[in-house]
Image (cartoon, rainbow, N blue to C red):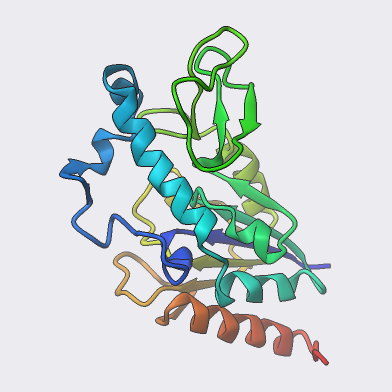
Amino acid sequence: MKNIVVLTGAGISKESGIDTFRDSDGLWENHRVEDVANFDSWVKDPVLVRNFYNERRKQVIEASPNQAHKDLVRLEKHFNVNIITQNIDDFHERAGSSNIIHLHGEIKKVQSVRDPDFVIELEGWELTENDKDMYGEPLRPHIVWFGEAVPMIEPSIELCQNADIFIIIGTSLAVYPAAGLIHYTPSTAKKYLIDPNDVKGDLRGIKFVQEKASLGVKRVVDEILLENKIFEN
């Protein structure tokens, strides 16, 4: 069974109504996203950081997976599919995908500052100062902030090294270390890039599908199934 590895970025969730800060002015209530997404900001102004992620969490809970998320599930019936996402939403899970790595954390989860291995699902959308860990300290969002290590990058690299097909969806390939994953894929792997925007960089050996995710993913999934002589009912 062929191994398909999918790398998704903000572009796949845009059609679900989720803000893509890099496409906008990068501001939230006159704060740069970088200013509310690092540990120093958490120490300096935890209320500001909590409010920022509470709004993101509420938005995700109220939104739904779009057709692009759902079309990826079609591949699981015929291939070994692993999704590596830079997104903190849970749309892949809710659409029905089985194997997902979240590189940058998960918005619906919170963790202990002192013990990063203590991670729990938050009930509802609002994290408050009264939500505390076993040490009596306030829980923080389960998000990989700027300047922090990306613990799931090593398992992601291993998946990419064994990919027969590699699909990139809705990411500019500008955020590292995720952007470097393509360099770990075998030279024999078939590679697709789905994005409506012009993408800078070397695209040799990559089939560029310049479409929004809902259209581009369907097109690529249909092509993969057809090339492998798989016909859906």
